Image 1: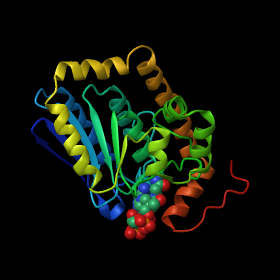
Image 2: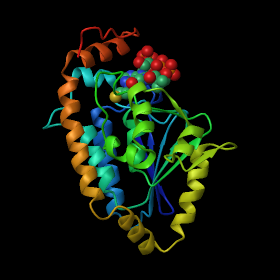
Image 3: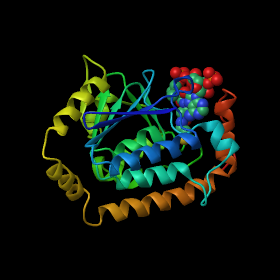
Image 4: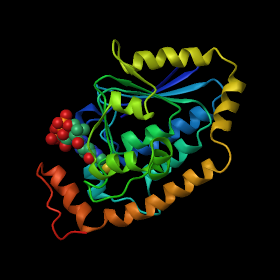
Length: 254
Ligand code: COA
């Protein structure tokens, strides 16, 4: 489900549940978080690299899991994971092939470098699911691309192509010839040969000042609305509709 291997200073983490489009269960979030924390503390790890198996990055939270065990203040594995990502000290690279949906897209805003294969698609379907965005995306996205562009993406939830994402600035490079992973591995290798101290301090400086605390505050503010909405009628309808492979009916549902 979450595979990982360490090779020449690079911790490679793979979301590996292709039969469910690498959607995350509670157990996967927990393992992913443990692996990230261990990698961040391990002196042998210089760079962390995220990718998905089977030509898809991730379809976001497992929707059946949301129905069966909605996240709560006491137990919110996706929110805990997002906080860990926001506080990670080591350089974090994502290689995106195929779809990145929901948290599969929001987590990219906590990566330092994002490489996408030319057919990659980014979807932020929170309103379509009767929810609100998470992962401080309502802070990080407008900061990067502006309010109106963020509203277009978050209100409509339509797929953003790799080329568009690069133009907007949340993808560093679109990979035309090889897989995004191959390119990301090459970039990670370049980083491992650099002065590690300089690299760590540069990442820390990029995230210094009020930014980190603002991100953590926004993650929490979004999470409390998200959890409330998850129990509401619109989200219940949208999540059941997805599992039943039908179009949701939002009429009169807030
Ligand atoms: N949670 C649970 N199961 C999921 C899932 C998710 N987030 N995303 C996909 N799956 C399952 C499907 O139910 C299907 O299962 P089945 O084979 O038992 O019917 C299987 O994965 C394949 O998905 P399918 O939708 O048929 O693949 P696709 O290639 O046509 O579409 C996506 C891929 C990613 C565009 C589509 O699956 C999708 O939109 N997923 C939902 C994403 C979402 O809204 N995530 C946000 C959650 S907050």
